[in-house]
Amino acid sequence: MTRTSFSLSIPQYLKAPFQLSFLISSGISLFLLIAFFRLQPVVPFFYSLAESNDYLVDKRYLIIFPVFSFVITIGHVFLIKVLYHHEKIIPTLFAWSTVAIQIILLLELVRIVYIIS
Image 1 (cartoon, rainbow, N blue to C red):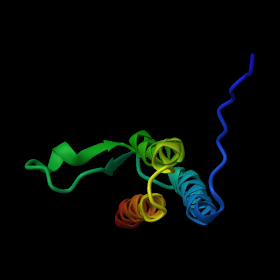
Image 2 (cartoon, rainbow, N blue to C red):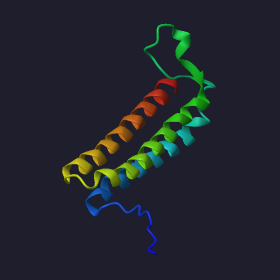
Image 3 (cartoon, rainbow, N blue to C red):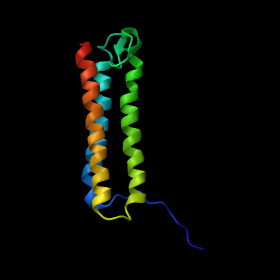
Image 4 (cartoon, rainbow, N blue to C red):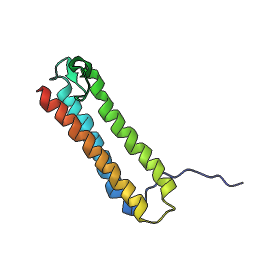
């Protein structure tokens, strides 16, 4: 009886975007850790709500950014196993879109911290 194992190896041509994505996720976590203790207790989270008091939240809610960033990265690494059987361009675009999402999350977090500081 053969034993099947789930391999989490990423193809060589996809390693660079996923390494960059993990690096950006770690950067988001480090940036929030550094800025967390300097922030006010209440921070703006959304700016497009109707009432101005609706977009203020406790600063602990900013932890959503690094958590969401790592969930996206790890989820996309698992999803790449499904997309691996398609043509090479589809997993490549998917991997680089992961990096783009990470950059958007980082810019949003920097924007929130910059506005508060």
